[in-house]
Length: 149
Length: 258
Image 1 (cartoon, rainbow over the protein chains, first blue to last red):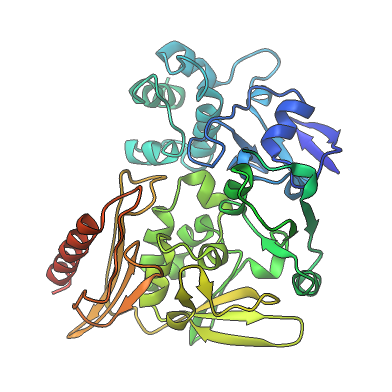
Image 2 (cartoon, rainbow over the protein chains, first blue to last red):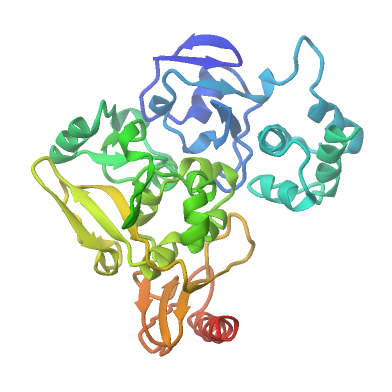
């Protein structure tokens, strides 16, 4: 089957029930996609599928045939961090780093829907992504900073 | 213990007739995967033959006619949240969708899947009950509509034959002028599974109440008497707490809709 990941077409040869998470990490070596809970609770494995925020641990790879997927590896352009990534760096939004790829993709999906989110929209947009280090406030500050530098 | 991936079959349905024919041959449907894949990862997915129905376009729509708003079974929580007609006439559906999982789950999970997964703790069934929903069940030869209030029979037991697919859910457009009330009580607003979930409608002395997480199936009541609910102790809460919360929510419902 064929799938586009971070703008590059790939041919995948994996059992159809394989989790997208495992195909991305093990077959395509995109280890920025993290496994946390493996049951759709923590958001560490978040990717964008055709622009929609999705937990890749809950997607059998058959269901992404012909789709376009963005992982954290596809966010920086030409060696330059995106505004959200740079803001996470500036504000201590990333600490241990396990939740960070998912948080950044969730923030990007949120900003696509709400380019200037309220605090309530921001909290809701990131509510499916758990972080055990930051207490979330630095993450919220980072996303606000990315929108209003 | 993880599942042995190659021992599972998964086929992509070309269209509804293909899906029905495969279901007739013993394949089970997977749509958004937000319940099925959790069992798969935990090594608890017993059935081995699956048909992905996620790509069947005619099952993902919100259609409006003078009598009904009809949801395709593959309508996602996100689709529900974005629907103006549901917000206007069936706001408890929108509130239930917004309190289910987080954004990623809402993008993927479907209303049809929420129904046939048959968790007594699911958040949309109480709303579907109070809105007097009907569900369409289709097999290769026939189709039928069933009152949702009669669909769940016992824990994970439904009026759904092995060769049938739930294809549509229709909501009669006669509740817009009722007062609507929805509360989910859980550990956290997003992601948490309900300890008690309460949907209520009221017009004058008529009430319609749907309750989740207080019995083996979602419970429908047309009375304030809660003696029919049977909450249990489990990992999320206790029977005693759930009963007290159900009573409190009933009181709040009667107060705010008075």
